Image (tube, rainbow, N blue to C red; front, top):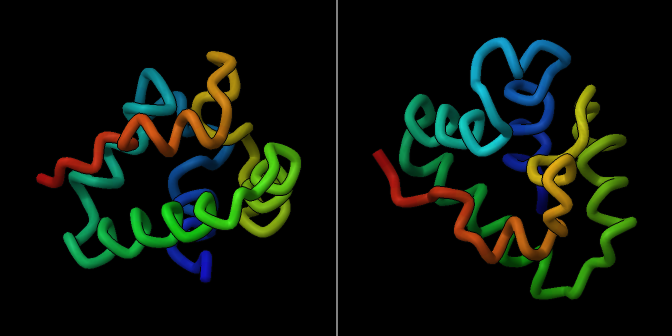
Length: 96
């Protein structure tokens, strides 16, 4: 259910992500620009499904940090954006 989300966390939000993009949103934009449209669509679908289940902030953080093995907080957490708020923002999924 969260395979692509875990891929985003592991492959894009590693400890040096801020050297590749100035902001978490910039890293998501990099994901959108570099991955095929099917992968981008899969991620958006996974996130919509995840939040349709009304996942708590703690559950979202656990998924990101533990399952995703991300070495950084989920995108938006430094800017005090909730996980659900980040998802509702569209995550810049307008496509390439």
